[in-house]
Amino acid sequence: MAHDWDDSSDVHVVEAGGRTYVLVGTAHVSRESRDLVRRVIERERPDCVCVELDERRHEALSQEQRFDELDLRQVIRERQLVTLFLNLVLSAYQKQLGLSLGVMPGAELLEAANTARECGIPVHLADRDVRITLRRAWRLTRWWRRFILFSFLLAAVFERPDLKEEDLRELRRQDVLSQLLGELGSAFPGLKSVLIDERDAYLAQRLREAPGQRVVAVVGAGHIEGIRRALRRNEAIDLRLLEAVPPAANVGRWIGWGVPLVVLGGLATIGARHGIDALGENAAFWVLANGIPSLLGAALALAHPATMGAAFLSAPFTSLTPVIGVGYVTAAVQAYYRPPLVRELQGVASDLASVRGWWRNRMLRIFLVLVFTTLGSLLGTWVGGAEIVSNLF
Image (cartoon, rainbow, N blue to C red):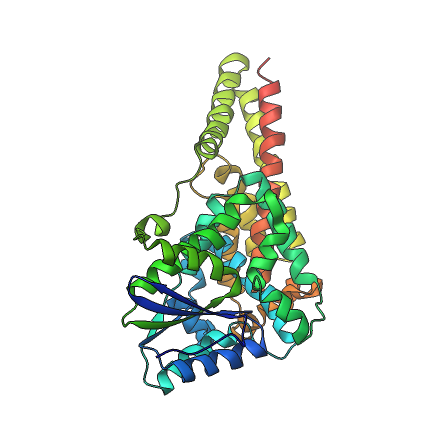
């Protein structure tokens, strides 16, 4: 079976390894993309349809009430709150674009899956687990650049795009996520590599694993060129390497363990040299220097009183261990006393774009608690540590 798709620059046919791949490049918020996807599948009647989704994203698109199954306490316990936040911010950015056109982000991917099922064609979810992608991106971004990344993404969310379908014809040359990453430029080479280049290779290998001789693949347009190159090379890719999350940087570990060694060693030295009273004064200064800024951070986030107490009491101790930070302690307490409602979880994308929404939405307020108490503890650690070190001499 062969069809001429010269009428669409968004459809590409690749012959590789004795198989035919029909690649449909889309913009994830485009009405035209959604219509094109259905037209291609119905005309091609392939042996399999691959979509740029993993299990979790497919579930999120197809089940509107999925948020009532979110175990926020487990997310906090596994220290995945930052990953969840990044995922929500990227989703909110796409939703901002989609709302201006009346098309939900990923509608064309869901359309592809639904059309395939209507035609009795197997559906193959081809993308890497979004949690792995975000964790790899986070680990491969230097810690001091993470603040820049947050600022850039938040600025993008607060923008109010006014796009028409004609604008999306240009966007489809990259797709929404690729266009956003392109604006990041050379400041985040590791991030672009994980979100674009690695996923090109991952998607290409998953297409090879799909059953049948003729496969239709629906992916963001920014992945088309990379997938075409990978398919034509026809070289097997070890997906386990692309699914492994890199360990934390050694520098981070040294700092994490170095601070408590310096502080505890300094206190012990002060006690030995100047007596128990000097030790008590410096220990009290350390407690207050950590506890007060963290408490103020919780207050700035309008946290529950129990969260403020937890911030003050835990910060002096969490600062002395790299295992867990005060932010995750206070986030857990806040989530316990002020758990977000399902409607608030569903409204995160819109509340992200409003300053007032950050304090109104309980989910976002948990993020504020995490960030503000962590910043307070960092400030207190440097102030308290500097005071202890200065008293050694």
